[in-house]
Amino acid sequence: MLVASPKYRRPLNSNQIHVLKLCYKFRFISVPLLADYLARDKSSVYENLYVLEKQGYIAKRYDKTYKLRGRPASYCLIAKGIKFLKTQPETKQLANEKVLRNMYKNKTISEEHVDHCLQVLASYLALNSQTNKKFNIFSKSELATTSFFLRPLPDLYLSRKQPTANKQSDYMLDIFDATIPFFVYKKRLRAYQ
Image (cartoon, rainbow, N blue to C red; front, side):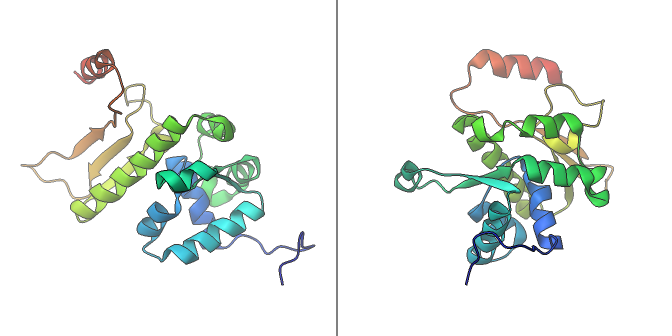
């Protein structure tokens, strides 16, 4: 029997903390993508997200039109989850203050930006499987503490785990929507040059 608001809650387990870190890394996640990332079935991932949502660490973005459009619900960090990441010793070095401050706006961010974040996660998963995990792949949130990357930061940065002399070791990936004006592409290419 579920109790409306139990008096005691167990501390978060390592799986739940890992999900919060992934929410930090990609900003938005969904059940199908998270199940693929964790190599677990969707029902156990949904249960994990449900518990975190009920405890107030994450929020769910979903409305009636999502089902008609075949779009999954998306999940993001909210105030309690952000504060949790700030206080935990194992996540303190991971979390960038500016990135966390921007995450307070997660509930009001546009659907286009949510779609972009989910596309970055899907690209991460595809690259990881196609390259047989030969690269360390970092998201924009993880790159925020480094100063040598051009701004705005790339969506993903790939660094070969075992560099070889005849192959490129580092790659930067930007994901653009088809509706982005052409001048934005040109500006970004000039920045890379």
